[in-house]
Length: 93
Image (cartoon, rainbow, N blue to C red):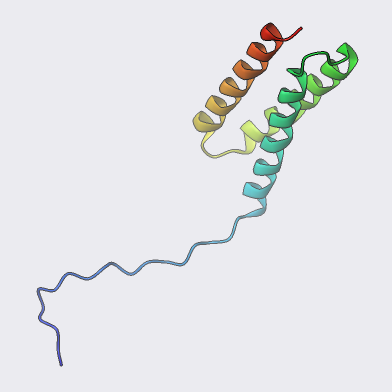
């Protein structure tokens, strides 16, 4: 049985593409930078640990921003994460 020509059909969809190596690297760098920033904000943390974590966060956040295609979204994530870090530092101890 043939369908009428005026029947609406869903457009052909493409299967999802696997992550590229670039996307995987950016995701890894974002996770490392986020964990490092949260480590800086832990109350009672030794200052040496905080400085090391801050250096790791900067060393991983910068390349992730350079490699990312949607830098605005990622920059917003880092602003929020840094804000949480600052609030945790001010509220702690």
